[in-house]
Length: 311
Length: 94
Image (cartoon, rainbow over all chains, first blue to last red; front, side):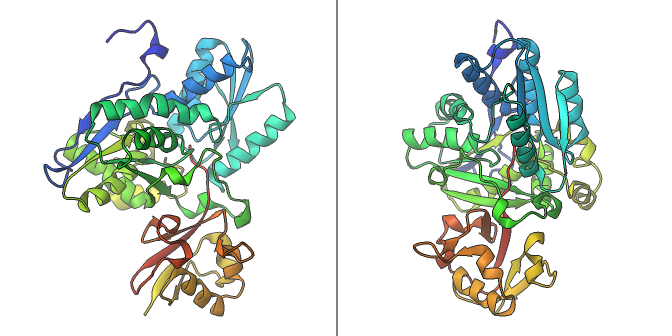
């Protein structure tokens, strides 16, 4: 495959069968490998689309400053594009994210403002909204409410999946900004109404849920529950176990959120005689090596992940 | 009969600090009413009774055996002995 530059190589990621993890030859699991994107994660799709849309609307001009709350992957993707396009990028990121994410952000020239670990990404969003109000000339793309995020998946991820696997019965992905599920989910249901769209939501340690009033929670503006068939909560323990199974059984070195999605995918596969389940693998494991997720006992890995934002 | 209900940190003021409590009921709504009888004030944090018909509050997520009850039957979701109900505040990801 040949492209004129890195940005043009976005998407068209491989769909890889999981013959050893699939319960039977008729109940099949497939992994969509989103690490095969320019900066190594599914967020490249959203980031590229959000920047392109902002440029088209005239909101982003050379030398502009972009501000974004992110637990890492979106920031990394935006940082790469910002570097190439000459924008300044300020990222608000929770302190309880892996060191590798910080390295990559600084490598691309992004500035990081840390938000408190307690309260996770909710706090990052709060801090970023406050900064945006103080700096009206900064451009907050706001992945949680930006329709270009979901549209990226409606126009690229969804069509790629259906083209590769017309027999698809279920699509399972992690639920964060909800962009992937809203965009790809909407596309798939429009084209093939029988497809089940299933969310796998990471369940973190207590610290991440913070101590704020329960009425101050956060639901991404993009979220439309009518697109989903159902939504599962997956513990770090289960996500870790499945991430390691992906390596051991299929040789796939994936990030921990992939284990989260795979756990839900396996639960669905066990309920069907015949199915073709696509599980979205958001990124590879490189950014999580320092968390101990891939070495030591599962108990040690779980313990080390407690309090971390691992997805 | 007992159903295990996991309580997030912010709501443990209603359970004397307990991260897990037990209750009974044949639906989620009944279970929450049962918990309310021993943990006064908890129900109002979970349910908006003032709406047209009582519903879970917007920023509270409840899972029955790890499945979001809003995709089952909400407060009418049947529950049984041995089930686990998890309550969590809504958080961002990404």
